[in-house]
Length: 362
Image 1 (spheres, rainbow, N blue to C red):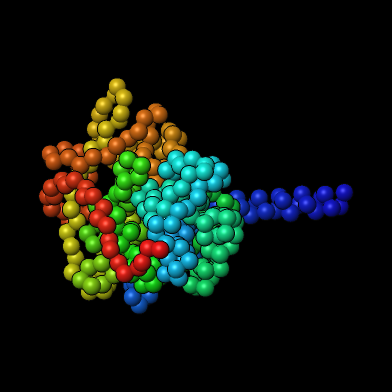
Image 2: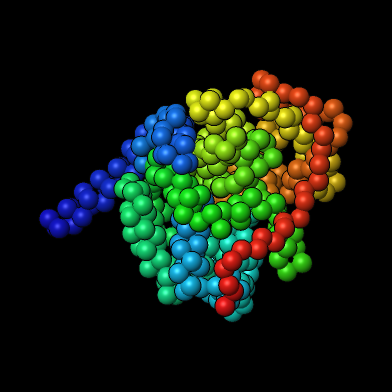
């Protein structure tokens, strides 16, 4: 009976700790901006609160993949087996089936564009000798070696796990290492879209279109984590990395990141750049068609609870229908992302161009 009481006490205590930890940062933003070259902190707000990374976890999965590519233990055109375990991952996902394969490069592209959880798991299993938990242990070891002392990984995708934790500061350290350690691979983060089995897979990172100089990194969302974002941007040969965690909406996340980066560039003596108008129209498929602001539909979708686990990495849904954002040319349905604006023209996305580098594909 004593052992049962002790076990119950420990279990209750652990659950209470998790509730307390969640309450500690629920609705509270964590952010940080660093100079990518020097590591100097240019701004920060609660950067050391331990939080859930959500799909920002995939940045470490990609770091591990880039390391293996450089070491020659894998190659870009190597087949990545798709296990039953990988196909059971929650969306967002490619929808691959057990027993099939995708290449290492396709997995990388799936992570940086669609944030595909099945591709992340399959890549993790390849790098972890067939075991995602083993790969997660490797990720944690590598994170600590990089100086990410407050980070623990439990999977390759960022799907919810109460023990998978990090901080904004640790993620900024990881972002700096991705930029500086793998200049030959960083270009993947700016991929506009890629084609997979006849489908066009677009990049869900809004900063690539919304912020001048932004050229990559990652979004992330789960209900427990809130909306997370890591961005790298370069202006006048000054590169910054920024992290925002725990935003309550996608528009808030984008605005906070843009403001933080603006202040960072200003602190580095880089002349300000006018922010363009972001032109967007949302069309709901089915019998009901209407247009509106991204911020309004995103907020409404979240309130109704129709979002999948990784809504930030997947098309928004409204009453079971997909919502598609498309550019418009007219003066209607615009959203301003800053005080300084000038007219912008809509442009269509260009196809991802293949980047050639010196790495041999074996």
